[in-house]
Length: 168
Image (tube, rainbow, N blue to C red; front, side, top):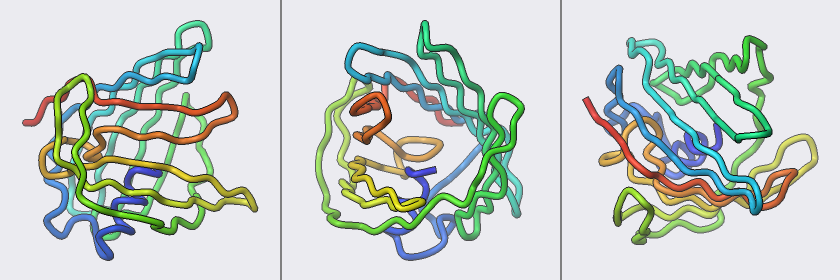
């Protein structure tokens, strides 16, 4: 949820106010790197309706396994309505996101070079705080607009980079 939460916070308003142009079948593919662990992530727009947008997220971390999630959001306010991973409902309470820095920036990833909004955000949840960096361009890059993310995890720093995308 972090990409959408940070994007919504940065724009100070509903995510549907011209920021995203979601269409069923839109897809964004990513490489994930966690030091000695590498993987792939595919995010797709499954369906779009006035009251909800459904996404799928498939992560393959090789020997660590695979995960499939379905995420349903309210497009008028960006709130997560449901999150189901590998058939199990997940807590969607998230946490508080505070923007530390935002500016226009250019980032180069395997899919190309993009002019993006660089966002450095502090996400606090259940007493834990972490800093997340993102480069987003929701006008050009489908699904969540993410070109690159750097975030901490239990296994060390995670770097996610766009490798390809398809817009309908």
